[in-house]
Length: 313
Length: 252
Ligand SMILES: Cc1cc2nc3c(=O)[nH]c(=O)nc-3n(C[C@H](O)[C@H](O)[C@H](O)COP(=O)(O)OP(=O)(O)OC[C@H]3O[C@@H](n4cnc5c(N)ncnc54)[C@H](O)[C@@H]3O)c2cc1C
Image 1 (cartoon, rainbow over the protein chains, first blue to last red):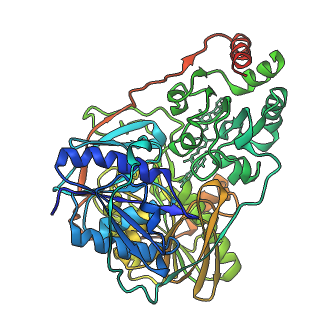
Image 2 (tube, chains in turn brown, yellow; image 1 turned 135 degrees about the vertical axis):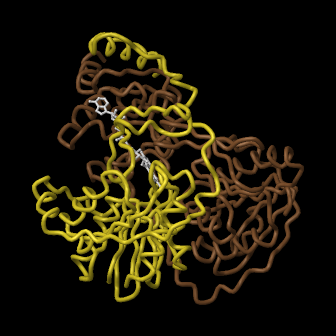
Image 3 (cartoon, rainbow over the protein chains, first blue to last red; image 1 turned 180 degrees about the horizontal axis):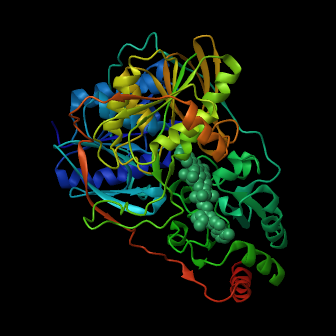
C-alpha cells in the first residue's frame, strides 16, 4: 500500500468537470497529511491534454477508443485495475452522474470501504451529508484505505489547478465484448427562456403542491421581470420543461435574486444555485436546509406570502 | 423480460429529524417512513415496461419496519410477485449488507433487468444498484431517465447536467439506477392495498447470516452547524412580504 491519493477525474464533451479540480485541491491537503502524492486518473481517447491543468504529482492516463466516452463497464474495469495495482491510501470519486457508476463499483471490485455524499474530509474524519442535507455524519472506516464519493461544490476548484504533473500512460485491460455500449450524446431542446441569463429567478418546488397553483409564482416572476425556474420534481411531473430545472442535473444559475419557493434545499438543488447573489427562501419548515444557503428566510406559508409579495411590488 | 425491483423504506424528510441518545443515529421512535422516492420511479418504469413488452415484475425488499405495507402497495400497483428477505438487519441497513443479501436471492431468479432507485437519502456507504450489480456480476448504468427493451437488448438514457443525456445500449441482464420514470409514479388508493393484502402471497426468503457490514461506521451524527446563514424575517405574511419587497428592490 502507498500513502498516495487517487483522484478519479472526469470530463464530458472535451471539458474537465470542475469537481475534478475540487477533488485535486482537497487531495493535495490529504496527501500532505498522509505523506503521499496526488495521483490523478484520467481515461479517454486522445485526451491526454485534458490533464494539462491538473495540480497533481502524477497523472495516470489510460487511452483507448473504447474509453473515449464514459462507459460504466469499461471505466470501472480500467480504474479498478489501477486501484488494485497501485493500492492508494484513498480514492476520491465525484458524486456525479459518472461517479455514481464508479465509486460503489470500486468498493466491491477493490474490496474497500466507501463513504458517500462526502462534504468534507481530512486525515482524521470523513463527513457526509445525509437526509437531503438535514443531517451530517462522521464515519470511521475499518482498515487503512478507503474510497470517498465527494459532493460537487464542496471544495474550491482553484486549489486543484496548476499543471506540471508527469503523465504516465498505463496499459488498458481487455475491453472487447463490453455489455454496455455508448451510442451518442443527446443535447436538450432549446427552451423558451434561458434561465442562466436572468437577473431574477422565482424558483418553485414541491411545496406548490399541484400544477394549478403555478400561476401564483408565475405572477411574482412576471412582476419582477424575471423567469420561473424550478426544482427537479416539478420537471419530472412535467409541470415545467426541463430547461427550467436548476441543479445537478439541471442548469447552474447565478441571478442577482433567487427566490426559492417551497424548495427544501437538497444538495442536488443547492449545487445549481448557491452562487446566486441574493437568495431568498420561503419554506414552512424552519429546519429546511435551504435556509443554510439563503440570505433571507421566511417560514410563512407560501400561499400567503407569495401573493402578498406580488401585491407589494 | 422479467424485471426485479428492490425497494426500501426511508425516513420521510417532511418530518423533523432528531439525533438519538447515542449521538450516532436518528431517533427512530416517531420517525415517519416512506418508500424511497426513486424506488417508486423504478417500480413505475418496470410496470410500464411490462405493459409494453410483457414479462413480470418482482418487487423485493429486506425485512424492516412497515415493509409489508410497501410490498402490498407494490402488488396493488401491478407487481406480480412480492418477496421479503428476512433476517436480523442493522437499522438503517448498510447498502453493502443489503446488496449482498439481495444478490443472494436475485441470483436464483430469472431476470433480465434489475431496476433500483438511483439513490436514497440514507446511502452513507454508496448506492445500492451499483453494489448489487457487482455482487451479481452484471453491468450497470445509473441516473437513468429512459429505458426501452428490444429482445435481450436495452436502450437507456443516462442523464448529465444541463439536460444532456448519453444514450447507451446494453445486453441484458443489467442493473439500472432509475432517476425518473417516464410517467409520474402511479398512486394506489388504500382500498386497493387492503385488497392486495388479502389476495397476494407475500413470499419470504431467509438471508444468509453473518454479514461483513459496510466497512465503516458512524462515529457522530449532528445537524449541520451552519444552522441558517439566512436572516429570518418575522411577522405576519403581510409584514414579511413588505420586508421582502424592500430587500428585493434593493438588490435589483
Ligand atoms: C442524480 C440526481 C440528480 C438530481 N438533480 C436535481 C436537480 O438538478 N435539481 C433539483 O432540484 N433536484 C435534483 N435532484 C432531486 C433532489 O434530490 C430532491 O429530490 C429535490 O431537489 C427536491 O425538490 P423540492 O425541494 O422541490 O421538494 P421537497 O424536498 O419535497 O421540498 C418541498 C419543500 O416545500 C416546503 N413546503 C411545503 N408546503 C409549503 C408551503 N405551503 N409553503 C412553503 N413551503 C412549503 C416543505 O417544507 C419542503 O421543504 C436530483 C436527484 C438525484 C438523485
